[in-house]
Length: 216
Image (cartoon, rainbow, N blue to C red):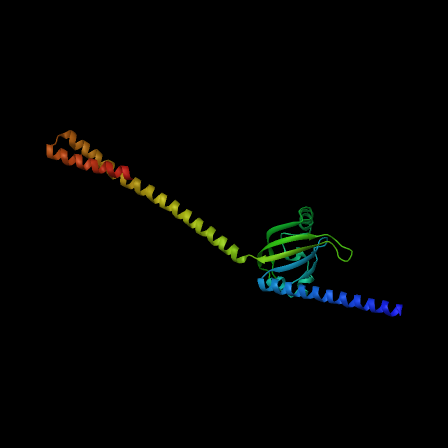
C-alpha cells in the first residue's frame, strides 16, 4: 500500500512538472511570437565563445539566414565591430555593468551592412547552462537613413549660406566701386563751381549714394 501511494505521489509530481514545463514552453512561444511580430531580434550568446545558443526567427530573417544557419555562427562572424579580441573586451564590460546598449552593424548573408541597436544583458552561469548574453536587436536602418538625410540637408544649407555670403560680398564690392566713383565725381563738380540748383541736385545724389553705401 505504501509503495502504491509513493508511486502515485511520484506520478503526480511528474504530471505537475510536465504541466509546468508545458506552461513555460507556451510562454516562450508567445514571447517569441510577440518579438517576431514587433520586429525585435533575440540572441542568446555563449559569453565565452560568442557562439549563438538561440536566435528567434526575426533575428535570422533580418540578416537573410535561417535559424539553423545563424545558430552555426558566432558574433564575430556577423559583426565586424566585434572581432574575437573586441568580444572579450566587451564581455568584461558587460559583466561589470550587467547590461549594455550599443549601436553597431551586422553583416547580412549577402554581405550588406545592417545598422542595429542592441540591448545586451549578462546572465551568469548555472549548473545546467553556461554564462550567456541575452540580446534584443532592433534594425535601425530607417533611423540611420533619416539621420543621413538630415545631415545632408544641414550641409546643403550651410553650403548655400556660404555661397550667399560670397555672392553678397562680391555684389557689395561691385556696387560700392561705382558709387564711390559717383561720390568722387560729385565732389569734383562741386569744387569747380555750381549753381544753387545744381548744388541741391548734387546734395540729393550724394545723400542717395550714402544711403546705398550704408545698406550694402
